[in-house]
Length: 292
Image (tube, rainbow, N blue to C red):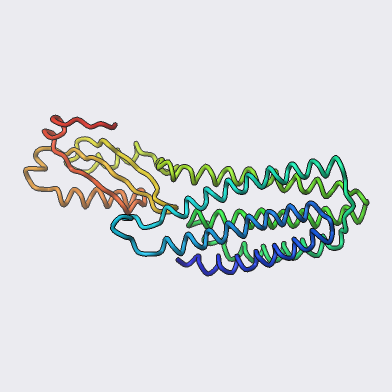
């Protein structure tokens, strides 16, 4: 998978940012910088998991894993979401404590460490931008790097405010902002990954429109047991029981009809993996469908 190389580079950058910001947090006493370092840790873990997922998912399928390990990337994305939510809660709590009890910090060290984070993560964003539109795992890594870039920028702002005004609580404000910033984007990704795990239909796919498209094929009289789901990001699947006229069966048009059904699914809905079961009217009457 072409995303492996950019993920590996971003992982190395993330580890370097983590080291720099941890050292900076200890030397400066800044909770905002520590919060950013904690966020970077989640970023590093997320990118490492994403790299592992895309590497394993690229391996060939096995008899007992007919879809390979494609679903692994969704599991990784879901786990990263829960980790980010937990870290957000931790940062928020610590930020509130720092607001109530301000602590002196060294803004010059904050600025140096945070600026390094901005630059390194900015490079990471450029590397992951294309892959973020193709894979949930890469998208998760992209969002983590994006939020960390903005968090590092916030630390720089806090340090500048402290230098200019001496208001130490700016450190707490940025810490709380980092926590609040992570939550919405994490929830969006969590909803998308859980949707895949629950095998719901793709959000942009109208099943009734799919049904109408299949019914337009000559000889098709009904469509039932229609299901659509996503195996992993960018890999939708479709299955259906297709009832055809007795005349079509007598004329042995099954192969042509299957080809037309598959072509319509691919051309109109960009679904390549399809399974259609053709049934004559008499068969459907004897064994009624169990699904709509």
